[in-house]
Image 1: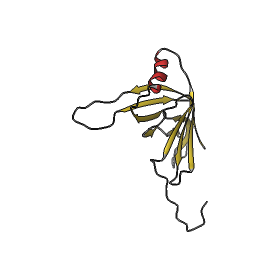
Image 2: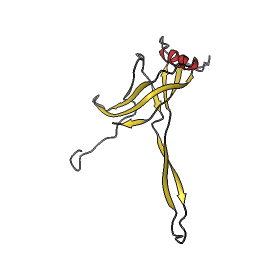
Image 3: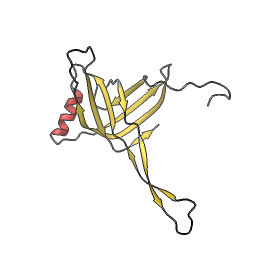
Image 4: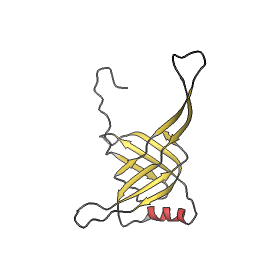
Length: 145
């Protein structure tokens, strides 16, 4: 913790890295799905009409979605193609956030992830944009460390 009164700037979203076991070309321009939500069940208690009890249920962790510019590597497609053929290869995936000095500040770890969706680039002859591929991963849970 910084001393009282010292300014602390929030971390920037563009300084991140993705680590994937077995994938060497894991450089991504966008990452989303760092989300958790707990279901809430309401319970009306008899006799007390001042409030409704709200009880926690299951917590759902969202799928992880990664986007990157298309390169000469097709490792992500090959990983997904194995899923198509019925061979699930799970890998631990980490999303790491760095500060402006390059020091690691946050790490989200996804256990036993595997691809469930691959989207190739959209081609438009009248645009000069980077070709983007998207990979969506299911996993067995997220930890923040």
